[in-house]
Amino acid sequence: MTTQPPAPIRIAPSILSADFADLGGAVRAAEAAGADLIHVDVMDGHFVPNISIGPAVVAAVKRHTEVPLDVHLMIQEPGRYVERFAAAGADYLTVHAESTHHLHRLLQQVRESGVKVGLAVNPLTPLVVLEGALPLLDLALVMTVDPGFGGQEFIAGSVARIEAVRRMRDRMNPNCLIEVDGGINARTAPLAAGAGADVLVAGSAVFGGGVSVQENVATLRAAVAG
Image (cartoon, rainbow, N blue to C red):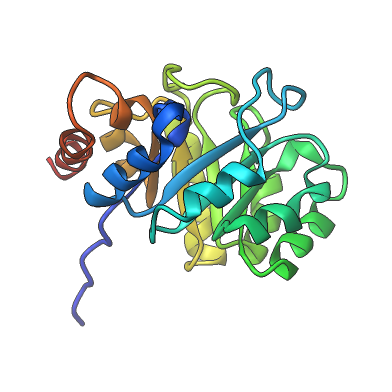
């Protein structure tokens, strides 16, 4: 029996770290650099202590790229906005386990909106929540920082959590992607990938550093491969 080689790691640049005065240009640069997803962080100033963007910006970004939009809702009462973000062009819509008392209902709502279903868990949220939801998911997002701001340090204990999610995923829903968000750079990307991540969200490591987006994405891929 032949063994299939592991699938290449997917890179999802986070536009939270891009130049908001030229989001279209940033997204086109990420696409040209080979981005697999465009990660869009939506924050409301309540669920997390920051405010970012809404459905109108998602719709504007959608007009500039063919790359799937990975929309991450860090908001209270996400059920009020699921259909609006789906209509704006989200391909994946990720909600937080901590944002609702009725998670099963919320995940069903996302599915019924016609987009792929993601569930995020914060660094100290028990993984049993994610385990129970896995059969319903297309994407499981393991937060490796406390959500709300870019540029934070990767929490070291996250590696064991990613490994645990990988074991759950392989057993319960092999088609579900494991995404990691927070503190991803050339040093931490191999740790997350080695622990079992399929998708790496990177903000400042893609849109910062004083070099091109193309060079930064290539650096991340080389770090994972090497």
